[in-house]
Length: 400
Image 1 (cartoon, helix red, strand yellow):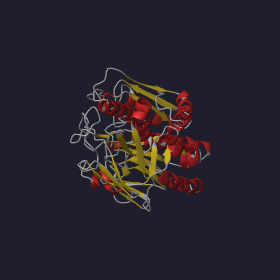
Image 2: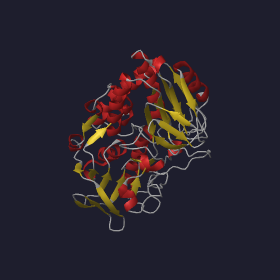
Image 3: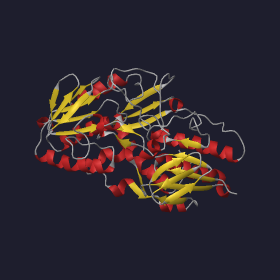
Image 4: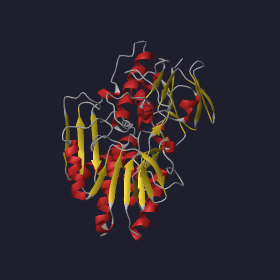
């Protein structure tokens, strides 16, 4: 009987895992993808949505056709519970048995970290498509009635790259609209220093980020927590209040509801995994992408999360797919690449400028790490977006 693999989630990690398995085993495996969204979303480009530089159509596509081209069954449904003993996933469209399971359910925004965040709150967040669209509506208002702007990331946040990109794009757009001198622009972060990024920083990074801040006239406040986002006022945990007309705050992430409902994750819904991406308790259940738990090799005065989007998520998915294929062949899963060992590859956009970030490992200790600034970084990010969307839409997941 053909082994059955069920993949929960159809974005970066889920799509990559599903198609990698089919590429490797072809007709020797049955793959079903279950996802509550029927669209692939290129989340790195959400930073451009509020400024009208991208639309939904530009950064998403329906996944059903892509999966069908490779004989992968797609179920548009939400997983509600995983039963590892019965080897079954319950969904809003019925139950699905599996021999192997890949959990790639991504993240949810944790707006409960401080009062005033979330839909209907006092600050915007661009870590979801809906949030980015709402941030764009607010942006149009602030262009008509300029005032102080705050961009930041709360304690426990992980997506610092998006916050940096957004604040530098704000500075670029304000200058483009001829109102930069009318607006005070601030960046507030729980990071211990500029350029930490949730990965411990890189050589020369702090100096480079300070240079970017000085050049663009952004006032940075670091190593601070947030207490509340009130109407027009950000209250910090040191009692200081910062006024604003427009604020975009990146919240922490937490795991999917199905993980928490199934008792498979930690208190925040993230799943502990081995270097093979097998879960600790069930060797036929894998977890990849943002939903995995990462232990960091540092301590900070304010909680700092670790970014796991994009390249790391793809790498985890490839490792998991290789190991499942080995198990199906009757071999032991031998490929290992823990999150900290994955190379760091990132492009940070800054409007008409940017930085390419490269390192041999995501987390310290490292042997090599470099940050390369320049306008070519902006062009590179645009080119990569178009390449990645083409590659993913056509299912060419073996390409870099």
